[in-house]
Amino acid sequence: MAKSLIFIGLLCVLVGLGWLATEQFSYKNPLDFSWEKGKTKVYFPLGTSILISLVLSLIYYFFKKL
Figure 1 (cartoon, rainbow, N blue to C red):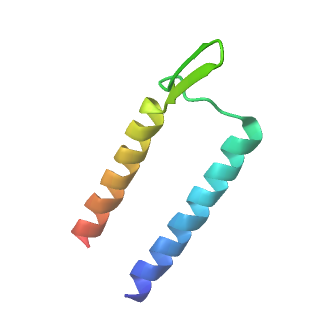
Figure 2: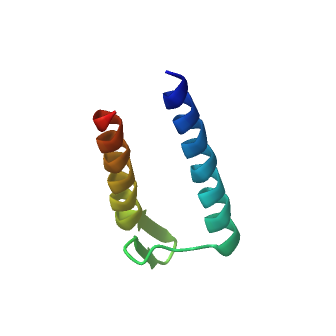
């Protein structure tokens, strides 16, 4: 249980640092879909959704191995 809590804590820190870095550099994923026409704006984070899904799948895979 202790190892799992340490791993989750480190993972949260890494995600937080990554989030902070992307906000600072204003990174835009090229696979995200955005469309603007007049006052209408549509944004669909397709690339970000795929990236988050891959990361969560890897985390699940490694926890399943433990």
